[in-house]
Length: 603
View 1 (cartoon, helix red, strand yellow):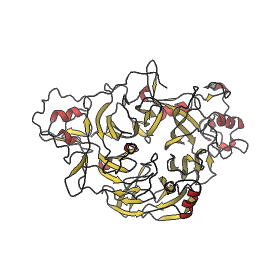
View 2 (cartoon, helix red, strand yellow):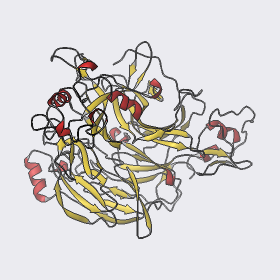
View 3 (cartoon, helix red, strand yellow):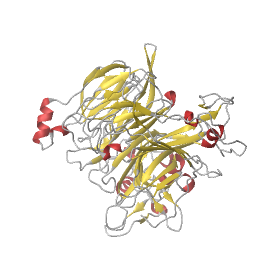
View 4 (tube, one colour):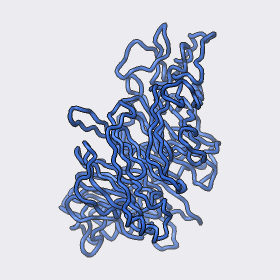
């Protein structure tokens, strides 16, 4: 989530919850505070370094292992203004060890970092398996108030996933609420009114969820996650991707049914698949954007993979909020007996008001509060939270697929206003192999072009990130910062900043520049291929739609920059020298159209 605050005439850009990193790492015997590499050139990959199980980074707040927080001014890399540290208490660490945890698991790993308002940020840490939360002031990072119990707001273990946001002054969190990690919960607390939660230990509501994102939209808060599919009829565990919805004005049920529990919790499957005679499904959601406009339509974009026990495959799918809403107004799914198959519930038999609605709105407009809902409505939603129809992706097919490779894609970020006219969508997709794909997305079914792979960038820097483990190459999160024209790539031990475009790699070759079809790049007559600054609409030549170069000659004799030249993404050993120790490899595929590969029977 991003937001701007102004304090003392100084503009700070606060980007919170960008990366909750290192969730899969083996515990390290030595936990170092976050460090930063000071590099001279803005063209190099800027590397923020840290070792440990959890690392959170942002443009002006960088949070490390024991909540080492660094503040710096936007657009001034590595100029840190302040640092604070919040460590787990001695008693908490000792009790953590008594409970059988390794000492390296007993640190205070930061899992929640969300703005409460323009003045305060809410931060929670695992605190040696005794989660605690605090408020800090944004202007000076001073502790404000008293410590708050983190139960159901923050996980116990740094490896456990969670999401959190404030909506209308209340904290919505999704995490696990017990030491054994058996009680998964979507929880609302703070603000006025009593706390609400999902039903405890009910697999129809949540079954081993892996929470990924939460977003406020209209009258609802949406949660995006993956979980074990209870409706899957075959033997064995199968993961499905989900979107769940709850009403912001939900106050729980009556004393008879769903008291202090959600009365509006509904969920649906997200369908990211390649159509054909037998659908090829990408069931496992890895990362998803906030709600953004795609062709003027509020949407979310996610990267999905195949099941972990199947052949590797990845896809990028987009979903409109209108399609999500349509599914939530559709039929419910039910299982009449524990051994029976799941079937649609007859619409004509639904109780009134319609289950899952918000009090005071739509079919429930005559009810002032969810407490007033009849028992029939509450009993139904208690036992039928799952919708029958899956949410279809925009265009009923992925924007982009990557199969027949040994790795899966793990993270993505989207620039939905790329190019001088802000009319193109560029998707950056990170992989477990340390590479980042840059894709010009086909966002409309009427477009004559397929999505286009613009670049394949090998970002991970083993030397600078101080890592010898293959698992550390996994891209955990990506973030686009348009203001600095940067892509932040988060790994378990470092965060690397990459420019969104490398137009200079085309040097003075007119044909190569136009053929690249990169919306960030344009040909400036008689000079070179350059990045087009935002708002500059004249003086450059582009052909993003077709990349037509039939009228242009070949670029013979053009000097190609050295792989270690500063215009290339690279990391150097010293900010005051030109010695290169690692040059990122860039594969440019200007004419490669992305097709869906032949569908295989796979679930």
